[in-house]
Image 1 (tube, rainbow, N blue to C red):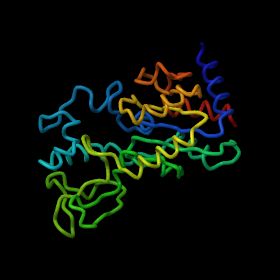
Image 2 (cartoon, helix red, strand yellow):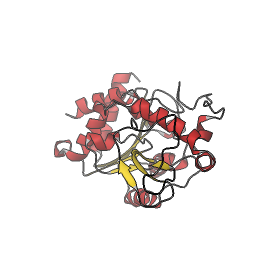
Image 3 (cartoon, rainbow, N blue to C red):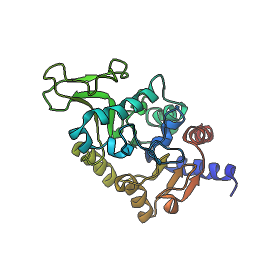
Image 4 (cartoon, rainbow, N blue to C red):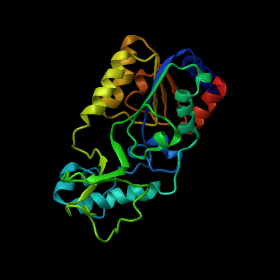
Length: 261
């Protein structure tokens, strides 16, 4: 099938849906200039940190407990990559689908693995940021101190980890590190929305290696409901997607929105 025909089909499927879950991964933010993780050229691909450990080990809860400076060195790398970046047109389109009645959707939710907060900045409100948000800092010892920041320019890379101004314990962003449990409240919200069901599930820019990210696509596929994947690479859910658009997130969403307008 030609790409134009695939886009037309995908747009028709989107038009017929009243409730849609969009699942987004690092590929969604790649069009804003942020690095991907596991995809082609991703941050985690065959890479070790300056400390001589793989990135995923450096970004683990265990490493933060043992040596938070190692974890913070990678967190600063992620934050610096995001500095000055902003949501792209694709983020804005998803927000418009939720907020503008002209599109005719009754219920739009976003399940994102991204920790950049771009969906919220673009105007989306019904967002389950399952891995947290880098802009929310808090005391690792839970003394109660927390702060919202726009970037990490105030953190000295030569004096890691940064310390809590109240109790002098290390601080950390409110994100889920590897090996840590997902937030129960966000998992409950996800399960509540999945029980309500979605006419369409759209996976955008994620390899879907985590079961809770693949689960909504699998549920819709088992129920015979439509599934759409937007990703230039093949992923864990490619084989069950009814439609695949081998495109980047921004281009695909712009093309779909143009067909809906």
